Image 1 (tube, helix red, strand yellow):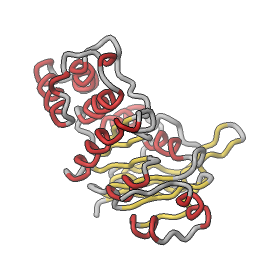
Image 2 (spheres, one colour; image 1 turned 180 degrees about the vertical axis):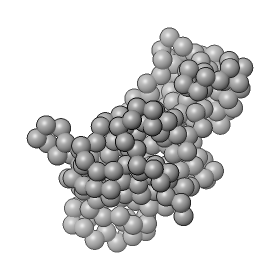
Image 3 (cartoon, one colour; image 1 turned 135 degrees about the vertical axis):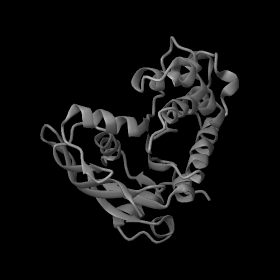
Image 4 (tube, one colour; image 1 turned 45 degrees about the vertical axis):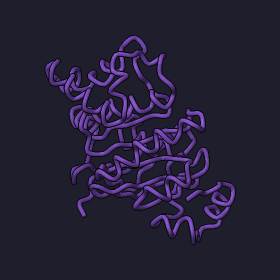
Length: 246
């Protein structure tokens, strides 16, 4: 399979704190990889380095067989092709949902207004929010806001989508609606890297699961291996403290 993103010996430090200690990773086109681990293990930092929201300290990030350097143009192009959905929805409160979703195609990709509108409506339909197009974010539930944020990411037609704990800011009853949208994306072949604390979801949706511990890949494998036969003691301990459904 074609590797779309790779990292080689990826290191990230904040002052004296080494958060990522040399991560080798790859994901192929159409693959869904979930990243699990305790708080502080480096999961979110890893995602942010992949999208150059954090500047790596050492190592290589390779996209589509090309090493991405510090060149602003190459980073900008990568960020258009690698979308990110955050814990907090980051919607513009002074814009309708439609205009939020139109913003990327319009401003970043310089598409004309009619084309951007058409794309936005298509993506809102995909996440089940076409009827909320002219509503402002404050009038939506948390689950609806997160689905709108997903639509905004999809409107850029990314090749890969990164999810950073997409349900952690939601009330439990709203989690299912967001996870069902992500599941649909997986079924449609979207390449995704998902940092999540929803173990049952990770087990169901992933082709591969990675357990990060103290800034290193402590274990990886298919969901059956990771959840039914964990080898690493820290993974065994982590899973025993998390209820796995499904």
